[in-house]
Image (cartoon, rainbow, N blue to C red; front, side, top):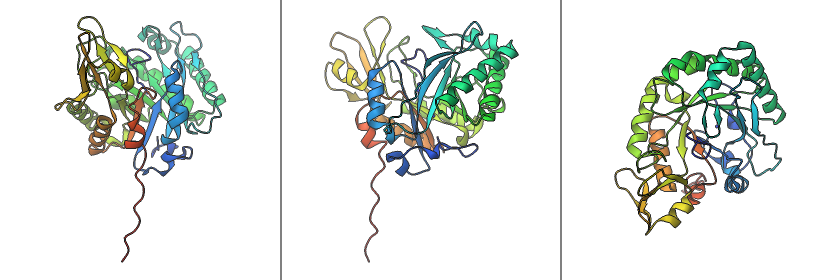
Length: 340
């Protein structure tokens, strides 16, 4: 993620370790067990909290607690702990462990922890205690902006966190990675370090700091995911997919937009780009907006499933096209058997 709002975003039945199949009741419980879908929440965004309350049971799990690693090597900073008893939110809740401290990711936090084994062990124990107190099971590690030379440090941090959480029954451990960066974030090396799953973030193909374009074009997702499948196998992947878009002015950086904001900003109706599958429109004052909708998300899921991937994570709920819930995440009604 490039900022908490753009992040990942955004954790599943598990065949290798204790699975997310024990999620709470609701539409997710009736969904075909060959597919697992969960979402990230953004604790600072009222839209995200409201969507979780309305739609949470359509998901198999939610990432709701946020913990940031301290750059000085002290105890991790608990940004938000979810202990809500709301039955509308899935029983399965996970924690996001990140090196993001506003306004950017801090690679130095990973380097310093790796160089201080005792401090790293204390940090892992502190994270485990927080997760256990909130009854969370499962952690997503999001340590971006690292260079290829940081791989030994990254592997050390992943190994210590994985060993500590798994020993206390708090796994699985998922490592989120920039989808196309297989040099600084080689999948097999991270799995060998102890991660249970790799989560390629299949979004931000175009982002706020770059030129206008789709967040996740169909062809880009297909080709990028194919590389990761070849690298570690489909069974070890969770496909991170977007629910948001960007609005770019004629000059300067873009900003993240929800589906509703993109629809309002468009000078005319949003139209589908035939090449990428994304919705786009010109802005009334100049510039462009590109956004994910239910039809694109459904198509991206189909692409991933065509590669054998069955687990998905959505960044982040509250930004979505409302049709996502009924057109993508609600299982179709079972057909009655035909009469003789």
